[in-house]
Image 1: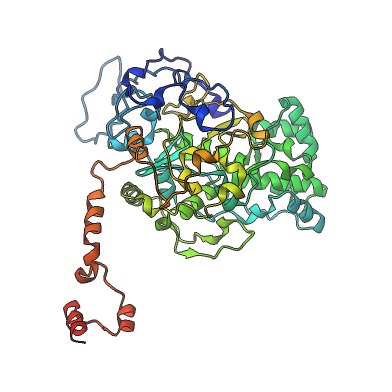
Image 2 (image 1 turned 60 degrees about the vertical axis):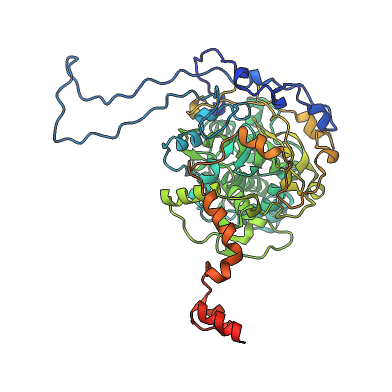
Length: 561
């Protein structure tokens, strides 16, 4: 049973939230002008009242218990040091009103009560997440001509060179803290941003159109199909279905010394690449076998939308990582980290290669310096994100024509990887397509019974798959008349967007933001040369002929000449 399928056995009746909403805000209307914005018929979606189940009662207070005998408590030992007291949260996981630091209205992100950002605002926190990565797995795959030709035909063979050797844990943690699973976007001080389908297409060089990745047969038939595809007995495949197949076992069974035929080795290596890079689970060393039947026909592997599947799985992993008691995260971390580098130049590593046409953009980042899991580094990243402005972002790193070059990127609906279904809503991040940001429509709501509590054991979420909308060309896509106003400048938004956005989310982690200091810098910018706010390098001064003389001497010399 997967994490998202587990559910708390008891829950109290749901509390109504309408009394806390601004009656003048038309976004709370369930019939929110959705039909007018899009050129496609929108199916009936669950209402906000069905979004999530009721509140969970607050946990009892924590007590420090000493050893007891016969029901009596012995006197404390004066020489012993008391251990740290664990402060348990007393707030519900589902918002019922205005929140300190935001949001003012809980409609947009109702499960923010269980979000790690809420804990950080209250001065609490957690240890940094353990990022699951298989970068140390080094199987290079079969190298005979026939096997290589089969691998190249799948459109996935290039993934063997797409894994970053290490990850910037504090940087990824800082962005996880800003992820909101209700909108599947990062909530920045200036608006929403997210990883789009065209980002996956360019960064990982994966196909985003095509068939959805899902097995449409029952488990028994899937086990036999997987056994045929990998040349093993059904009991072996059944064990892989239950426990997962270790990456090292795939290397050992289908490696250079294997007696399996080329087709079996090719399927095993594709499964190895997918489990190592795109669909990394939290075991740290295994790959789930539920998708193995998709690899049975090698000539059809390239027909699947591996890009949308990768993004759906990463969305789910990000959502679970935002829960206050999460401890680790899987998914395609290479995609996440390279996305940060593309859109936020201030966080880029010092070594950058020029992009080569036809190759994944992730290959141009050289992450060779190890960034330790240091809390001070994480706090600095939070501060820099708190004070960041929209003009600091590279909004269109892949050009302004991405909606034409990658048509599926303007799909508005759901994306899927096996049983994991997540909403994809490009109208929330129009500036990443080169268009002016407007107030978006309400996010796609999950099915009734959804829960996003603090503990991952209680994290249960599901959406209407909407597979028929995905498979019909040019259906369920944003209308160009709706989003087609070019952004001038690139971070442009309508006047009503930012006030609405700030009332509905939580965008800062420092209760005293750095905007004051940024304002002072802007005021002093015209006098920067006179005040010497930026000390020039010695080489620059030598080239200018000024040596190391004082600034006043340079001014007099310039005046006299």
